[in-house]
Image (cartoon, rainbow, N blue to C red; front, side, top):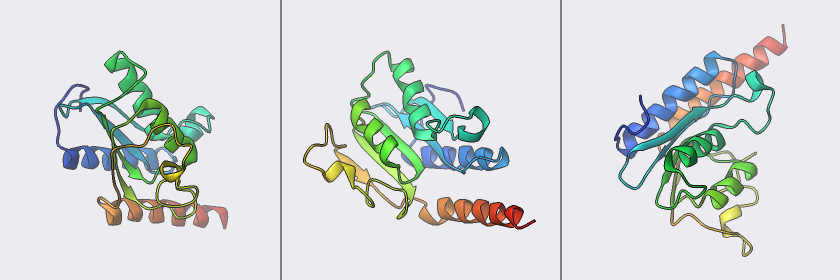
Length: 161
């Protein structure tokens, strides 16, 4: 898939799931993300690179938003949609506010590490810098969640070897 291709949010989630699969094959937590502009053109997409790059901040959504900002020619992604396979963590939720993402769509809930519908619920805090106009949770939740369950099950199995 090339940048600037036009896709629906449904197709964007499918692409994010494919990126999550790629991440899992590379030994990364299976998370993928796609950023669409206001006309549904792909501005950025990425998978997790935390282990490969030895960088705790190399989360899929953060990398996708950085690429989108470069493509967009602006540090602000007003009017853009972020599609990601997992509920964003506090770091990524904060980045979403700074990039000024208009709409967030995510797949699997993360009761332990999420910061949108769980944990600090960053967008509901009175001091939140910017709130997405729309948050759609649980899109392809089973598909995204199953990838995570299989990945961590296999990881636990290796730890017991």
